Structures are given as structure tokens and as C-alpha cells.
Length: 223
Image 1: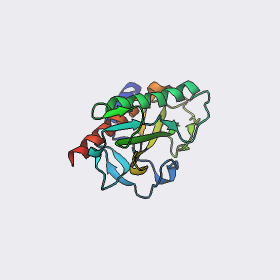
Image 2: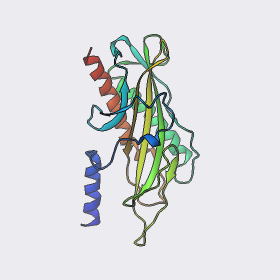
Image 3: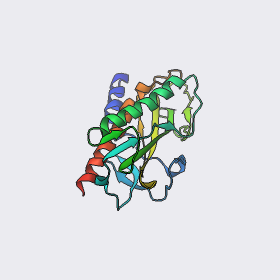
Image 4: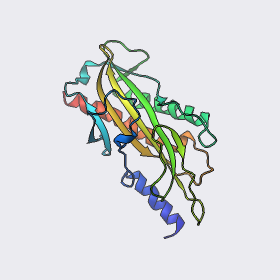
């Protein structure tokens, strides 16, 4: 198998979400959410596996708008030469933009919450780069990590993983009505020296935002 063909096969595999898990293991939860015990493995509207909980009494139709709190890293990471501050800011900024872009298609996005508002609290809980093909790989779920492993044959491509946890809160009473945890794989880095950019994870963030929009549409359709 040529290197070019292998790269093409890997890219195709990532696109269909069949070569990497989108589930975050319970021992990798960050502590950002209120209650992880009620999460269960479910299928997102786009067909990938996530850990999710939705209050069975949730009536999305009662909300006329959503307020999206600025996304954050949890806990706050320390930038480094591989993942600089500009990349961190770019990731959270793009997450905010993507959520507003997608959700505004189905519900009004407000600049401040009121009693008829569903508040969305998103967090980035992992950004890591692991050396492709080496098991077990180095991952610290709630921090930014780059695995520096190499092989006798030379450096391998590194896979970039990013995870999110989000809670959905009724602004009228502060009650959490839904929670979700998931992860995705960004663009492969060529080696352990390449600097991660926000562009490397934008497709993953787009898929998260798209699923949030589709989830709102599905919940509305049930009522």
C-alpha cells in the first residue's frame, strides 16, 4: 500500500466516522457537568455515538430563544509551542461562531437570557495529538497533550483528538435539562513538531454544532 493511498484511505475513514470512537470514556470525564451518572450511550442525529441525557419532561417548544455562553476550556490549559495561545483562542472563538450559526437556523439566538431562554454551556475538555498507530497512546483527557513518541522507522503522523461537554439549562429556574459528552478526530499532524491550528479541528466543531441544531429540531418534532 503506497503512502498516498494509505493517507487517502484514512481520510475517507474519518469522513464516515467509522474508524475512530466518538465516545468519551467515563474515566476521562472532566468534571464540568453536573451529573454524569444519568448519561447513556445514544446516537446523535448525524448517526455517531455520544453520551447524552435529556430530561424526559423537556418541552423545547416553551423556549423562544437560546443563549450560548462563551465556550471555555475546562480546566484552563497552559499554551505551549505545539498548541499556542492563538490556537486556543481560535478554537473557542470558532466553537461559539459555529453554535450561533447553526442554532440561529432553528431558533433565535439571544445576547442575554430571560425566562423563555434555553442556556447552552459548552466546554472543550480535551485537545490532544497522539502518535498514529502506537498503542497504548498517551492521552490526558482534561488537558492539552502532544504524545512525543517516535519509532525506529522515524516519526509517525499524529492524530488530533478534541472533546466537548455541554449542558443545557432552563434560564427560568436554573435546572439542567440536558447534557452531552462527545469527541472527534481532527486533521492529522505530519509530525511531533507541527503546530496545531484551529483549522485542524474546525470540521469536528462543525459536526458538533450541526448535531445540536438537529437535536433541537428533533425535540421540537416530538411535541
